[in-house]
Image 1 (cartoon, one colour):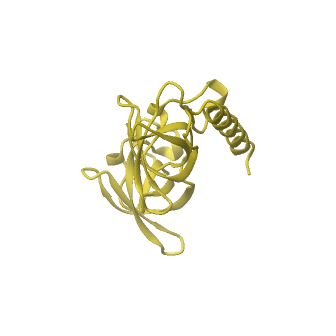
Image 2: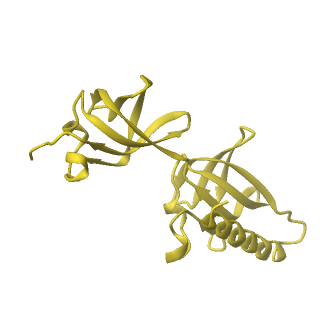
Length: 193
């Protein structure tokens, strides 16, 4: 287990214990895990699909503690920092018919770096198909915050439309909700702006 995950687990456990000590009479601390399906920061709600397939919406209030990767050094995260597709472990209670979050610890899905050649680009749909050296082909949707670069990364102001069929690329991708999602795409071909 990485140092980050150990710290998150300890902090979430301490927060859950503190919350448990202040539980209303008859309330029981519950825990679940799953994949974040949606986040409504304005309403303070997070909808997750649990590992057993149940979809549940959790309400996060001022007492809720949210932990998200890369955020521990600069302070606790907020509901707005959570992303669909991340995995989450949640400690919560039932209160007034709602599932109220005590602590939520999220982690992005594992990412892989894929080296290959672009076989198709659909800028309108925001997708790219890549074939690796072993002949494996996969189509990825580019995430809303996907970073594109050309010239081996030297031109970081590129767009998906700057990448062409036949370009050699390095792509950082993940499987989110059963679909391939690309987060970084770097073409090796020199493109003159």
